[in-house]
Image (cartoon, rainbow, N blue to C red):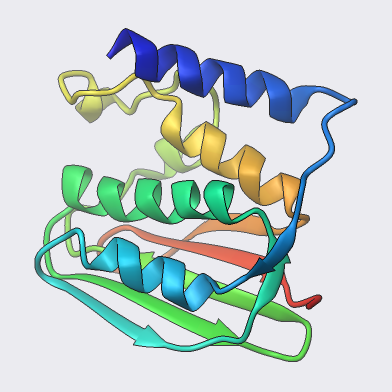
Length: 160
């Protein structure tokens, strides 16, 4: 557990560094999502997209964290939907749990933040903060959407 925590803190520090240059390549986000979905039961993956420029390892971490959180904090079924337009690729992860309070929405991407009802859940409150940093490094956006359950949307530039 300590190794995992240290690894996350070091990655956050590298992403924070002004000297940090994101190494990118052609990435098949559809394949990454498909592979991560295979790791979990009761998941529905819909959609497709072409290749994008990005860091495959970091994007895999984003997808793994968001799907993992859906099972850890929400309830199945979990749905992942991938869409593409001329200038962006988006994916939405939805679970059918209780969702998140408005108060928690405002702080969910803060480092070490854990919702009042999540104090006894395994973790350190770094996952979504790290996910946001990775999405920001890719010049993308991440936001929590309103609706039933917990719905989170990641949008990345379609610049490949």
